[in-house]
Length: 506
Image: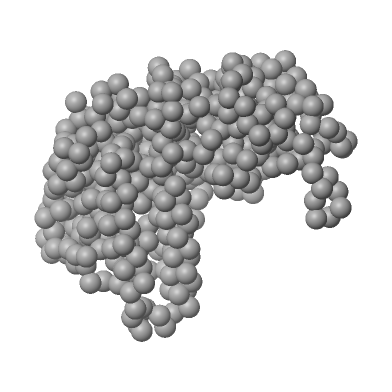
C-alpha cells in the first residue's frame, strides 16, 4: 500500500511542478526551464495521470506557483486572473482526456466530481457523487464522509481560486442542502463530526449572505451535536472549536437583548465537554494530550474575545485626525486628545496598528480600494500610534506625526479617515523615554497589529479579528448595514432562528 502511496505522491508532485513551469513560461517575464527546479524537462500528457492526481494539482498549483516564485524585482510574475485562466484551461483539457478513458474507478469518483465542478459541469459532478453513494456495502461512516465533502464542494470551499471567489449560487446552496439532509439522517455515531463541520460552513456562508437567521440556526444545530455522540475525540473537537464559536457569536450578536443569555448557555455546555475526563485509551498517546492542551488554549482564547462582544466598544481616543472632522469632545488622556463618538448610527470598520508593522502597511494600502466596496453608511477607519522614532532617530511626537501625515497623505494619497494617537513621552523601566501607549488600544487589549474591530451604529462591538480578511469583513458590515436599515433584531426573530430549519436564499 505504501508503495502505491509514494508513487501517487511522486506523480502528483511532478505534475504540479511541471504545470507550474508551463504557466510561468507562458505568463512570466522570461523563460523558466524545468531543469532549474531539479526535474527533467518533460511534460506529463493529459492522459498520464488519474483524476486524483489532477484534483490534487488543480487545488495546489496556485500554492506552488506563488510560493516558489512570488515576485521578480518586486513585481508579481503572473496576475491572479492569468493564473485562473491558465488553470481553467488545463482543467478542461484534463477533464476531456479523462472522459475519453471511460468511467472513473470508485476511488476516483469524488476527485472526478471535483474536476467537473471546476469546469461548471454540475450535473456530471452530482452523478459521480450519486454513483459513489450507491456503491454496494458502503459503510455509514464512508457515506457520512462523502456527504460532508459534497456539501463543501458545492459551497465552493474546495475551489482553487482565492478568497475573492463569489459566494455559492442559490442553485449550489440548494444542492448542498440536499446533501446536508442526507447526512443529517445518518446515525449520530458516524455523522456528528462531519455534520458539525457542515453546519459551521453553512453558518459562514449565510453570514456572508447577510442571512443572520439561518446562520444562528446552523450554529444552534452545530453546538447541540457534542451531546449526541459518545466518541471522545469527536465530541472534544466540536466542543473546543473556537473558530466556530466566534462565527456563532457574530451571528448571535445581531440580537443584543438575547446575546449574553444564549451565549452563556452554549459556553457552559461546551466547557463541560471541554473539562470531561479523558479516556485512558486516548490519554496513553502523548500527541493526543498535546492536541488536548492546544485545543483548550484556543478555546479559552476564543472565550476571552467573545466575552467582549455584544457590549459597548471602548472609546476611540486620538490626538490627530486625518481625512475627517476633528471631534469636539476633549479627553484628558493627553493634550489635544479628542474622543470620537461610536454610537451615532454609523457602522465602523476600525483597524489598529503602527507604522513599522509591515502587515499594517499592507492593510492600509489594500483598504484604499476596499473602502469603495463598502455599503452606504459604513465608515472605514485606521488608528495609528507614534513609536518615538523615525528611521534611526529618536524624535518628539509632533515631529513624528508630521512624518506620518506626509507619508500617508502626500506620498500614499490615502483618502479614508486616519486617527493618530501621539501621546507624550514617559519614563520607562529601563531609564529611557517612550510614548504613552494608546488608551484605546489598551482598552481593547491590542498591542501589535493589524487588529480589526467592527462596531455597529449603537456603539456595540460586534466583531474582531487579527489580520486582514476583506471578504469576511465585507460580509460583516453588510449584515450590520442591513440590520440597521430594516430593524431586524427582535426577540421573535431570535426564537425562530434558534429552532427553525435553514431558509432559502432569496
